Image 1 (cartoon, rainbow, N blue to C red):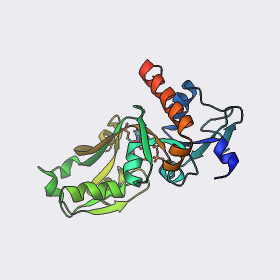
Image 2: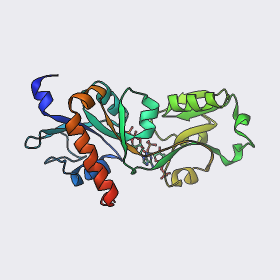
Image 3: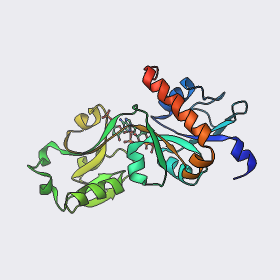
Length: 221
Ligand SMILES: Nc1ncnc2c1ncn2[C@@H]1O[C@H](COP(=O)(O)OP(=O)(O)OP(=O)(O)O)[C@@H](O)[C@H]1O
Ligand SMILES: O=P(O)(O)OC[C@H]1O[C@H](OP(=O)(O)OP(=O)(O)O)[C@H](O)[C@@H]1O
């Protein structure tokens, strides 16, 4: 860590659905920078006056930036933390970005119990999570890793089951799928690098407390 790194607090924000609410809650807590926008092509945006710099990462990569200390803190979904299993501190549940990791199946393949799906194929972007879930249930399945549009897989015979995030349930409904089990719920979390949390304790603690105050005042909505 250089002395100029020591001066700055580096905050990782993920592209995608959590960017806007994450940037909003940070701004309400007094942490923002000119030009900080999901549409920006700049990946590092600094606020010199506040000695803070924001970096914009792909969703799944964010815990890696924080684990290695390339970012001191970050905001990311619990689903990604469980999937990536990185060595970071989880400081706060930010309560937004609520969704559920679910197992779903086409209506016509619905069985009585989960164990009836043994030896079937499961399509998912969250392969470690799916693997862990079925293993914990003692059910042997074949996991097929995809990168998106998971609901397509059962429609074209690539897999019988899916493990994916559900928010409103609309995507499942529109693709004739029904929920058969919940793997875990998820919301956005504030995370910190373990070393940064010690050496920049005052700044990180203050930021976490300011965000907590925004959450408790109801101003985050
Ligand atoms: N309906 C939803 N679908 C997916 N994620 C949701 C939903 N609602 C809330 N989330 C949260 O938003 C996070 C980011 O979702 P997003 O779809 O932007 O990322 P992503 O699909 O992993 O990104 P990419 O498409 O670049 O791979 C999820 O990890 C989850 O915590
Ligand atoms: O319950 P709903 O409100 O319908 O939301 C759930 C859908 O949203 C997400 O997909 P996303 O839009 O991120 O696209 P992706 O499948 O390419 O990841 C998720 O993977 C589901 O497909």
